[in-house]
Length: 195
Image (cartoon, rainbow, N blue to C red; front, side):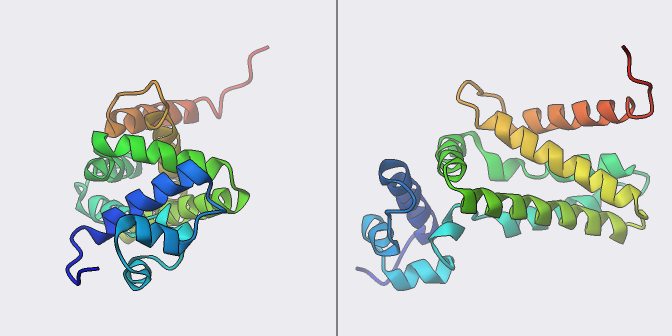
């Protein structure tokens, strides 16, 4: 194998996802992933701690996008407007050509409880990142935490809609729709239940 490894991370990700989809997550080894990608195990472990982490690549990038977008929101932005900016800033991470791979990843995750647990942890960390960024803007709790929770729920709801087989809409469109629905629902929280 050559020393020069163009797009090693993407090659490993693609090889892993294809292998998991074909043979199941539990049966695929790191050695099989690297062989399929035409890379070495050493290269694999430079990019990922283990095969599970292949499925959750990009969390650090999303956290950085959220933090930077919230910090860059106009000074007069409300907490929800700052969260909206964070969610819209993720557009480059969810290009339409990544949707098919994201669908396969979600199918693998859905079949394994340990992966679903890791997915929930990822969601919690992204939500905490938004809350921290909102607090750094001077937004106190509980407003910062509540806005971040709404943003986190909008993110996961939007992502679930984006990977639905029939969906062809852009990620930012579906995540914005989810956020708008959640914000509208908060106005009903103080209203009496109708019979």
